[in-house]
Image 1 (cartoon, rainbow, N blue to C red):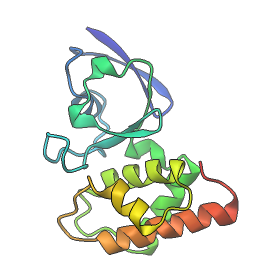
Image 2 (image 1 turned 180 degrees about the vertical axis):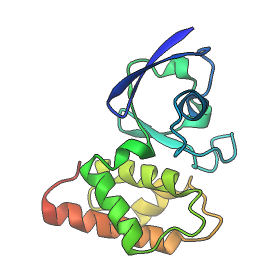
Image 3 (image 1 turned 45 degrees about the vertical axis):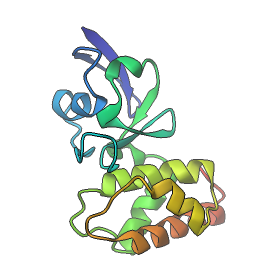
Length: 159
């Protein structure tokens, strides 16, 4: 079945069943491999993408349920002000160790900052609770989110 998806501002067509998880459509059909497979049950956050700005687990989202929603992946988040600031903050705070979870971490952080431009620690902890990091870089992740939020405020943009 032909499915049309709006991914990172481009319309993509794939021939796949509607029950195919968005994760596999992105990775296997379209070659967008920044979104990672972690647990396959929506529990670890490695596969987080945005659907119309909301953070969702691509491993649990069938492409048939996406409809006309705008999908943004880690490959496209840097084109947004918030995404670019998060990526810069991630580098400044040397957040990555193995890096496997970091695409999902950044995607969840971007969704948080889009709705809560000046989050406190509790906001960050709540928004990021579903994203696991085996390397334990949680304190650096929190610091990077605060830094990106400060830059958003200083430069007058939350989106």
